[in-house]
Amino acid sequence: MSGTPELDRVADARRKLAAHAGFPRSYWVVYGLVLVLSAGLPVWVSYLPSDGWVYVSWAIAVLGVGSAVYAMVRRRRSGVYLSRRISAYPTAHRIWLAGLVVTFGGFVGIQQLVEHGHRDIALYVLAPLAVVVFVAQVATRSAMRADIEAGRVTS
Image (cartoon, rainbow, N blue to C red; front, side):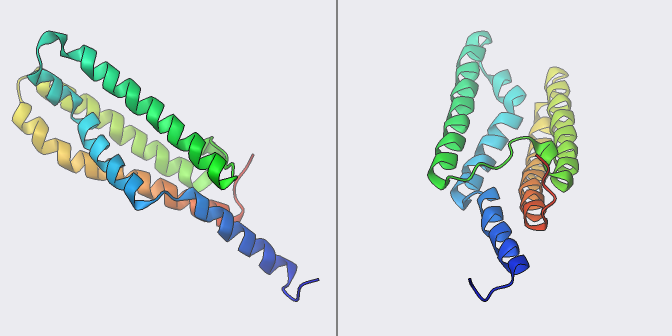
């Protein structure tokens, strides 16, 4: 039997497991770019001809499938299957909900600005909105990691 106390081994195991809640920097760089592009969809589509939505819908579908494949490959490679339900992480759930409200409100706000002919203002609002949503996502992942390390995850 090892000389390390059992509680220390449990804490070490939680820290190792929590390391899998984070994403690599390359993921966050790509996520930031995709976030700006997707948050500005109403602006970008307003520059396209009326049949431009076909390409946008295909691009969104490709991004969704790519994201799902990335998550599956990452889970299989690591062998760690964390709970996919955000409600399993009590601290992260609140941050995620706040981020969701900001995301939805910002998207609707940008859509309204574009519909009323204020594309320039929508472009100015796009950058701060993308930063706030990005920070909310990073904070959610950090809170998930903290919840795992503290043992607050529910099944």
